[in-house]
Length: 446
Image 1 (cartoon, one colour):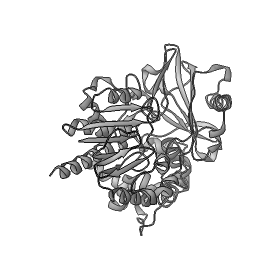
Image 2 (spheres, rainbow, N blue to C red; image 1 turned 90 degrees about the vertical axis):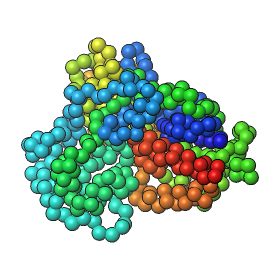
Image 3 (cartoon, one colour; image 1 turned 30 degrees about the vertical axis):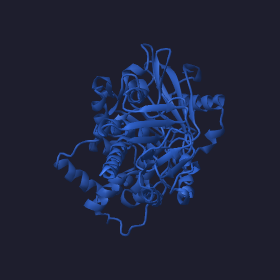
Image 4 (cartoon, rainbow, N blue to C red; image 1 turned 30 degrees about the horizontal axis):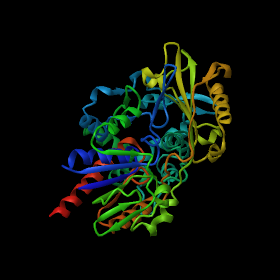
């Protein structure tokens, strides 16, 4: 049995790895157009600093990424976040304000006014949504929690996770669990109380690897579960009597897994997917820039901060990277990573390195109350198209894509454009896709 996986990001590598371990005798080829696999995930060292080009970690409360690490027998490489770095902040009216992490701190904090806090306490008495119309995260938040909660809590959270616009993103697509809790319990607060009484598993601690998230990519690539063809872009796939053929002339494949961004999939010639090209091309991918700085010890403390869009800042926020994971900085300097871009800042796509560093240092110096000369820029990573945005109605794109792929037996589609943008979402989809491929090939043999 021969399987081709198109795309060497975490979704493609994860799927190929799981298939390689679970489908005896399978010959698996992974084709990645870039010279190195991983997509936006990579880690770089510079003068004692360890910097990430994309995600900084994953939550240990969900099992699939940890399961892959177990299958790799690399548990000792895991690095949980520093428990002392739990302090998270937002910017409110130009100043850093600590987010409360307990109910008591919430009531005494300045995040919301008394009226805003009272509005949240009314949440259990708000009727759950009626009808099946897709709802934005902002509409959901205003309906259940009030406008202040959207402005000062949901907006920066969405910006930090998706680099997205709370007024456009779909609640059901971006945060399906929250949508399910409202449908099941009628109230988020009541759901939290009932689930706590059942000792539900927490979301877990942010976790990475000793050598950064790029280490996961390296371990998968070197696992021996598949053959990696880097620098090999696939633009056309044909279905013939003996199987699938790629434009690389590698012979026939019994199954093909597509694990590329939606915009790349829209540009490919793939059997069955012609009618969904416009859908795929419509998924927005705003730009992102990651600008790391060396900051003298003692200036920063905690996890970092996010900036609500109402603040009209040129940056999304900053992570105190060496506070989260202790081996990211040096003895004398902390690593602080500034994030720019996202769905509200497409201008980042056209900004050069000097402009990005200047914008990042100016804003960061102001929030940290230091001189700009105290911030030493030590790198820059820019993605012209970074995180896919799940606008309202996104589920229809997923449904049409799935129906189109299902019309071609042996063709499978996965990736963060459809099944969640987080590392855990991608690894969960990897297990699910591998299982579907295995079932298909088993039936083909019968």
